[in-house]
Image (cartoon, rainbow, N blue to C red; front, top):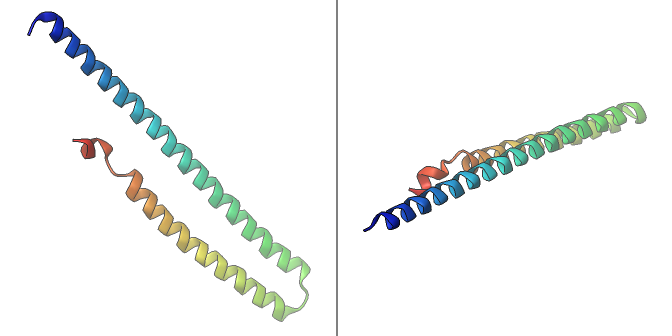
Amino acid sequence: MDDEQKWSEISNDITDVAKKIKSRIDEEDLVEDLKDTFKNTIENTSQLINNIIQTVESTISDEEIKKETKEVVSNINVELKNLLHETKNKFSEVFDSDPISEEE
């Protein structure tokens, strides 16, 4: 193999590494965007539930209806927490895996 071919292979290797680095950076940005969006969704949902509870407190005068409504909202809140916990675990499994070791 002559020197020109060796330099060509080295150049190709450098190009491949640069592409992998760029791809990894893009993936990390995407993951961060997804995490931020997920966090914002959780915060907004939490705020909505709090608003519902406040609305129930301020607008419903019948204590039995108020109590039942708050129980329903509380059950929804518990289900959402469970769903969020499961989703968080799934995200962790997907995003915490090491793509570099998977490529090798």
